Amino acid sequence: MYRTAITSLPDNIVVGGSLDLKGTAITSLPDNLVVGGSLDLQGTAITSLLDNLVVGGWLYDR
Image (tube, rainbow, N blue to C red):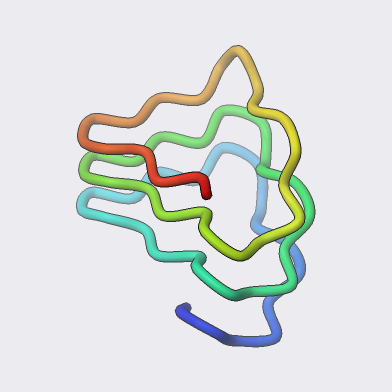
C-alpha cells in the first residue's frame, strides 16, 4: 500500500506479514489491528497508537 490513496483500514484486520503504510493518506489505525511482521507508518498523519494494536516485528513511525 506504499504511497497509495488509502485513507482507512477495516476494524479487526489481521495481516500475517508486514504492513507498509508509508506515505499514505491514512490518519488512524483500526481497532484490533494485528500485524505479524513489521508496521511502517513513516510519512503518515497517524499521531497515536491504540492499546489493542499488536505488531510482531518492528514499528517504524517517523
